[in-house]
Image 1 (cartoon, each protein chain N blue to C red):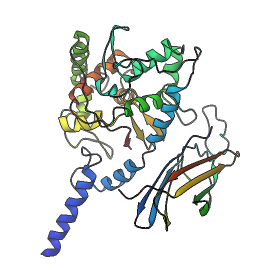
Image 2 (cartoon, helix red, strand yellow):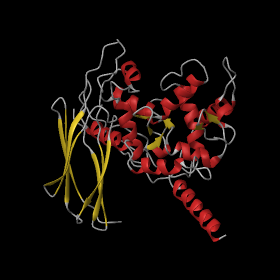
Image 3 (tube, rainbow over the protein chains, first blue to last red):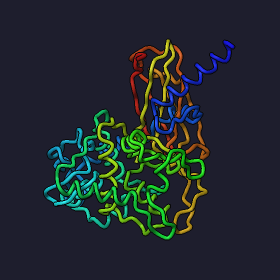
Image 4 (tube, each protein chain N blue to C red):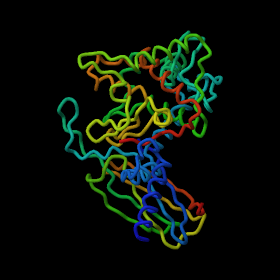
Length: 270
Length: 106
């Protein structure tokens, strides 16, 4: 009998340790939790953060300028807490923008890059590292330890949120899929990959506070834009255009519900 | 092109737990690009770790090591503030050295 009690205690301890890293995925008795903890301690995503930091302050592009004058909503060059309050409405572009859209706006306006070129190279591959992914990782990481605090005070912010909610629940395309098909119940999987239930506040918060994330299968750091694009591809829907209104609307919907959760990026995922 | 490493060294008793993350493509020479051309081998050949200038690890690596490699080791007899330095050299002669001080146990 004492042996059995000890076993239960040890089991509980493992759950506790795993819970500290990725609570959403650490279902009871999750043996992968140990591995996830080890990955999180030495997260290769940190290398992207470092690279992003260098790129941010470097004079680059046709206009040979750094990004220090870029306003992410907290004033030019103010990065602390900026990601926690995105997507938000920006007066100069008269649009709701997520971090990546805003970054591209700045790279075009301040550094003179062409928007089309950036869209083509924004997602890196094994042969070419992406500057945008590194910059997003760096800027987002400046909100680490802060609480998600996405505003809905402007009418356009509210519209984006409502549009995102509509899209999230809408089923469409040749397979009649929507976000809700995979992310509406606990315990859904694609092959062995657990899918978070995004209608559960806790699970959703764990998702939005851990992107951008390093993906082991990609050997790369990826952003929410990438995640949504792949979701659309997996649903066999037309390609989700980079920085499209749809992607920003879904991000608005998800991030707003994440309000109050503490950001810890980059995450580590499969 | 050599990107900085991420090194952590924390004291556990009189042993320093050293963890090193390196950013490197580690091409095996087997992979083909989108045009079907073989991508030439490009990998870290040697990694040398020193503790206060004294070599504690001298390794020879091959293409079998993954992209963005992670290396962990434990150095006996280390004290807080000791210098741990890591140098890698790849088969194209590219080199990178980074150094950290051993942090006291938290």
